Length: 70
View (tube, rainbow, N blue to C red):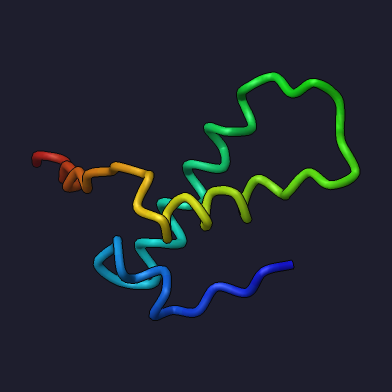
């Protein structure tokens, strides 16, 4: 299993917390795609998502949360 350092994941994200959130949401998207059976050498989806984030292949944008109007 590959270990990702905070410095490594923050190259393409603002901070390490945001990078983990982006990778987690992207791994959920990857999980929706059908797979052709499980292969012994297949990487986990979170590992694939973190690799793609550190390589700069994931584009994302932060949408500010809407506050309820009173």
